[in-house]
Amino acid sequence: MYAYPRKRSLKKRFLIILLLFLMIPIFFILFIRLEGEKPSVSINLTSSYLGTSQNLEIKITDKKSGVKKVRVTLGGQGKEVELLDEYIDAGGVILGGGRHEVDFERIIEPKKLGLTEGEAVLRVVTRDLSWRGWFHGNKTTIEKKMIIDFKPPVVTVLTRAHNVNQGGSGLVIYELSEDCPVSGVQVGDHFFPGYSGLVDKDTVMAAFFALDHNQDTGVRIFIKAVDPAGNTTRAGFTKYLKKKRFKKDKIQISDRFLQSKMPEFDVPDDEQAANPLLAKFITVNNRIRKENTARIKEMTSRTEPAILWKGTFLRLANSKRMAGFADHRTYLYQGKKIDEQTHLGIDLAAYSRDKVTAANHGKVVFTDSLGIYGQTVIIDHGFGLFSMYSHLSRIDVQPDQIVAKNESIGLTGNTGMAGGDHLHFGMLVHDTFINPVEWWDASWIKNNITSKIKDIQSMMP
Ligand SMILES: [Zn+2]
Image (spheres, rainbow, N blue to C red):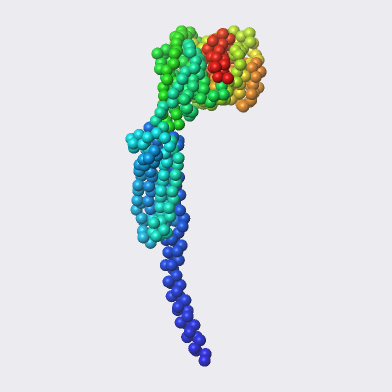
């Protein structure tokens, strides 16, 4: 009576264990080989517009079974072409794929593929190694609408005369046939972007540009426009480039100047040099100058998308001009030439610690000590036009501050590489230093800038 149920329970236990063993492959199949997580696809394209060629990057991720196959097609206007059809090696029958992340890179050239202009669809179909769908795997399909466009943009120049001096500025206004992410004036290796906003029409662009003081009057100048598909147009325009003679100047470097100025600069002394202070001066005048220029150009690479200035630019009141724009300077020490540089601003002097005001309306973008320039303020006047005030003894403004024309920004001084109290006034169009004299001249501004803007605005209200 006692032993019977004990025997039955042993048999029962054995059956339960057997059942559990049988359950393992079932669970394995249900939860691992029949997993339902779909592969994910990420597509990287620079634009949804396809021109001559564009790079396509695809990343497929499948955390569980792994990626099995990928097919990419591009179709439109009744034709479909295959860009990619790959079968990924399975890692093992039991556990599935060995590759959980697969990257592809292809260059799409629609014209070479025989596709025509118009709407198109980029389709990515991928499957994983799951046994779902009768062993076909989980499927992900991604479609991206594209536009195939081979037509370069049309540029219509709206301004007529463009007279530009070496070291001077110019303005060209043009209309684009379509929105272009990049357009502007190319002057040799300098590029000056155009901005919309002069008139209500978004395709009317204005580009301030400059001829660098050391660029030849034979330099290639044209409007460059690149549409979203990458199609590029280069359009010429009527221009007259005028050569300018720049002054040659000699600067005597005295021991007194070296002793008073060099300690200001954080450059290690060259103990090996016969004259360590003179060696330091040459380092500052070359390496530090280059670093300072790079910093200025970084500040002038971003600008307000509006013309903030109005009327002529102001010159330091009642001041005398001490040095001109693009003066070629030869530096002499004890009668011997030690260095050469170009002076890319105008030196003005009146009284010491004289009040310095903003030359025109704008936004302060820089207030800091800047090597050879000493305490410096840079003001953005919009559309790439900047003014710069150096050797200040005091700065009264802060970055991002909006300043009005003639508003006080600081006091003159002799910080940086300045022999005496004066204001170094510089102006730039984007990365190019320009002659401020033009911007101080009411009739130059009227003839070359404001009358052009008025003409276009009256043409297109
Ligand atoms: Zn100067």
